[in-house]
Image 1: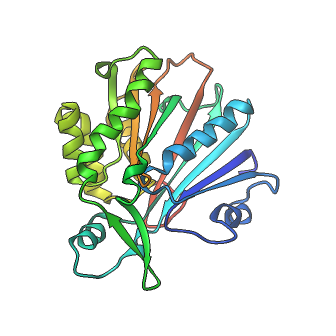
Image 2: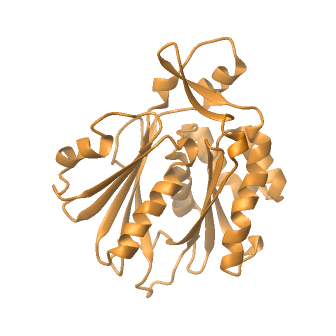
Length: 280
């Protein structure tokens, strides 16, 4: 941990002061000079803006490592009332954490892709559709019914300029690393983009096995791709997450050839149930 120059933590369920990152410095053995960033309140989409900040650090500081952590205790937001909204939220949401260690250069793990670019689209007219609200001294999840129909168009608005910048079409993307916000959300994304079942099998597997853990969930999906998708050099991938704001966040990925020594690579560490940096 002494080699990590930057630590970024995202959460929407774990606000504390001092922040989670500061509390990990001594516990995990980071350098007393490690730079920190806390990204709070971005919900299910939080992993990608956090990843972007970490990529920025690695690009600006060649040879240095950076670590991002997404951690959520969604069980802290279980709320009991008579609405379908809370029933669904309590049923699909779960606790989880994941970490990406980023490096620049030949020491990086080639199983994992290079991070090429990012794009964001924020529809501020839908800001109240998803999030957390304080009620009776507790956190209560907000899940607007319209999110399942908004997801596809919002993702497309963010995805189009990202692919255009790199001269790509959707047909050239082999891996769709989509945050599984819920079964209906995945179904509507699949319908909107005309995707085959196989293209979203990794997202459905994570939702079935772990539930929606908010920000770490899309990181679990990438790990599922790496372990079971047989990515090959030259393959393109897109990470996608939808979160409060309403925001669509997308990242362009590419698996590189074994002799490529440039770019930003990451090696994830995945955990469920609150263990921060262990492997599942």
